[in-house]
Image (tube, one colour):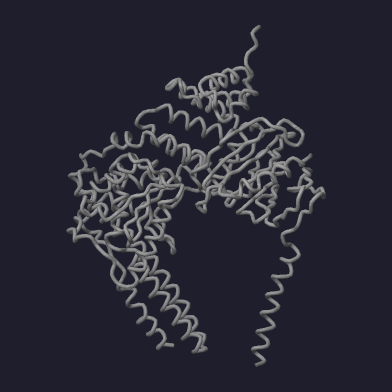
Length: 199
Length: 404
């Protein structure tokens, strides 16, 4: 019985050791109307509605927000990607390097950079850029583009993104959601959020 | 403890009996066995697996990554059927999947999946046939079922050994249990490698008895080693060791496969046709697409190797264009000069290839040759006024004013 109690306390202590820090560092809430900086950069947004911010960040200078979970609607901010850096964290820097944003990268090549990053990172074969247009982002001349791809889980996802290069750094916000239902449902909420972005 | 050792040896006996030794001393790969008629699953395990595979196949039929092009599907199926025989082949369904990896697989119920990355890399009909016949060999020998049974027996033994070791409360018993577990894992993966060798030999047997050049089977692996070496070299990595077989490797080393496939190919077959022209013709519409999928994977060395390998039959506009894209995507200043040159070659080979002018224009602008680049971009818009990025390009290369 003593052994049993000892084991029980040990297990409880172990469980707590994992639970407590994760509660402290858990995903957080971004409240409507409160201006916050995103992706560890000077980019700021004022969400017109409540959003969830995920603790897990896809890259050093990236941050993901969602309404129903990142597989159903994923808004990712890229805040000031410097030349020579990839958009997201490389799984294996040596063996599977990702394409890098470079000083010479043109604004029109940013959609290709995102495409190549998705293809290399997810090992997918179907990705199509459906439109690339000039557009304002962060109060500057930027690019807006749409795309569609079949993700690793076999689901077709659509995406919309806005990007701008400021002082040789790339600022971008992307929205990815399944083509079925979720993309159309959340698109307006994404656009409203992206419209509030400032630098 | 000695009793436990005896038990562990007894437990391993059925596993080791399952291990297959390929007849590597034979002069050529054995001829395929006679066709025994259409096979139906037998026993609860096999029937269960076939049902699961049937479900997967239904899902695959609705998958967006499936390539439905009738011409391409008929061609690949025909290559398989001509190699293994139309009677055998009737038990299988071939599905082509758009995924840029070198792979093909076969399930127990006869579903063959061929990935687009394989079609990009095989250079002729004989090379494709060798991979398809290898996969068919797994199906014919019902390797999937044997592997499942082997894994289940192995994990049963491991589970019982851990129970016995737990009961004995003896350090020696625990150590023997760990040793036994390693033996079980090791023999499972060795079993898997032997299955691959057997499928290789069976596939080569089909190729030997077909009208295609059997030596192509070894060339598939030599080509793949060349690609891996090129990829590693550009990434600044050591040359991969193709002779090494890791403990958990499911397949034999590429070098070993190339060696025995080359040694066991029918010598008289060396002069046979490998169907390179037929292959190129059947893949003509898809090659630029598969190449584009590869180029965008950001594996410079591998992509360059594949492009150069395809160019051995002559440089085409599509190959020059793919090379231009590869260099522009990497985008070092030195790459941009090369990229512009490759796009020019592409445009020279096919003056209507709009995307070549786009690539040329962007490369020149990045290299600081603005007005020259704008000229190329204008040509792109002339050829493709409804391009998805037309508005953006128009902004970068505005129409020339009348005074100019």
